Image 1 (tube, rainbow over the protein chains, first blue to last red):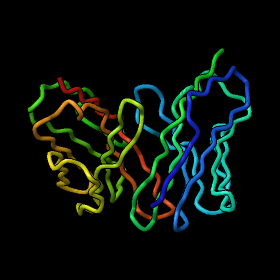
Image 2 (cartoon, rainbow over the protein chains, first blue to last red):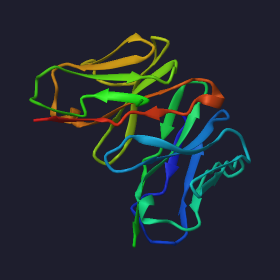
Image 3 (tube, rainbow over the protein chains, first blue to last red):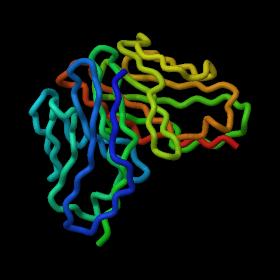
Length: 112
Length: 114
């Protein structure tokens, strides 16, 4: 079945450092891909999405490109802030089963 | 003007009790979901309803029973609570259409079974 694999955390960075969180997927069809963010004590909220190959999703300085050839959707940000500290989830939506498949989450901690 | 709301936010109860969690969305979505998040933040889908019809029913104990009285509400009833049911339960809603299938999550209900 479909699956999402993302890098294990926690990831600890200094403020203004470059961030990459790797995400790869397996899917039989052509899923939409998402990054969600969960701040402490809150529910998940959409950070960005891409619906087809070569699409780039971007929001709040974060970017991710849908790479069909490498089945990847890596999250990047050029300069992280303390306020970016959260858990980040990569996900795909399977149009055939209506399911979202979430990765295991990567905790990011940004130090001032 | 909360989009997806859940009640209660915290629920502490004894083993063997029966409890319910309620979810409401005011986004006009046709699909609602229940997820369980464990202590390691792993998120697992439990159920999904589309227009009041059950479309996803994952392998969860039959002590868990969802009920959708209308498109805007999806409640979760849990019988005979066990220690392993302790987790954070999230409700979410979306459309099923590919272009608008972003899921919107509620704030979560932290269930603690003693």
